[in-house]
Length: 501
Ligand SMILES: [Zn+2]
Image (cartoon, rainbow, N blue to C red; front, side, top):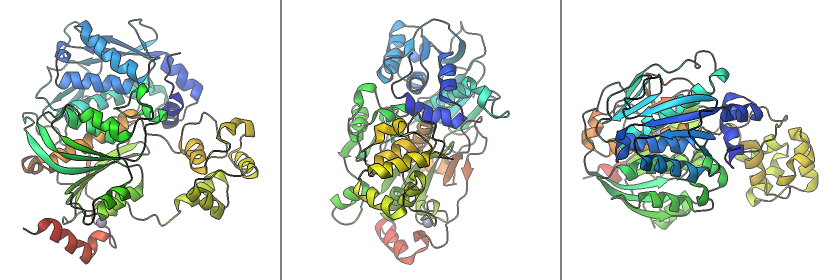
């Protein structure tokens, strides 16, 4: 068995996205070999090599069997090392077992069968069923997006029998401009040197990782990044963190991001702490002009907007969707807080109480103190979830926060009858594409020439990553009445900070 040691998390993502049983998921994965064919363009740094590297990075987080064919053995070894560092149990072989899903990166004259052909050139990304020309102008954002689209297509072809009829058809050839989300803009536009200025990066998780991956490969880019996260890497994170290797478990997420940026021209500072800690550390007014938000909670997003940076960029995933948005406070469009209004419904502790069958007050008490429930309460939780005590024994005496994350949000292999709808963990290519789009939006919005060529709409979305990519990516979002962006005082502070000259 070459399934990764974080397979519980894989099941929480892939199994639940497809509504299939764990045993079915294992059977299908073990019956597939993803076959990578790399052209000679992969022998040196550039779009093809970047696409190959990020694609095998994502594939190694899900599929137990991958075969690699390149024009040099050093490229084959290089890609195999990337995969094995993520899942040391992975079977990298030339054995043609089960169903083959071929992906061709770069040009291969010896390969004539239908396959998945990702391509990047300038700001344009293509995905085709037949051969394409050599990749175009170097652009790590397009190369990274091409890898994510290829991984999405591999996923759909691997699990077509479990998809709704329309989604199960292979993607038709498509192309997408990351500049304006049309079909042609920016193919002949090379990435110039420039600075992103000073940027605070909140959240270095599943979306932050690929954003950092892309920025690190934009060699001519300068600027100063604050990398802010308070957590360490857990084994379950390996399911979709593009920068994480097996040996990195327990490393600070800030260190992981810093390691990737080490060879870039970007200056960076690590801050291991929460958003609030970071705000406090600045002694007074928040002076950083740009904030990238990639946290996994609504509160962090609301705080980011309330700090009133000049520009906020937001990457997100959820319910089979992904997207990115950009916000300036003085435009007639939604601010980030408009997109995440305070929940009129339930608080976090009320959700916990509901999910575990506890009294709301008691759940709140345990939650804020991070305490574990009593033996009787634990028994009641088992009853509420419809499982035997032995089955959830490993969670006994754990803090309520861990029990909730593990049993309800996370990675348990149990079939919990008491829970109607459990959170679906995003797929790795879903998070990767959200992060790549976040980084590319940062470049576009901090370069006036690119900003002019870019889409005006603030909201970008792929509605269903189990279906072929849509032709319509952009949305208009208007300000929400009652939001802070309609407040005179907030407007004045913003104008004084950023518009006075
Ligand atoms: Zn607003």
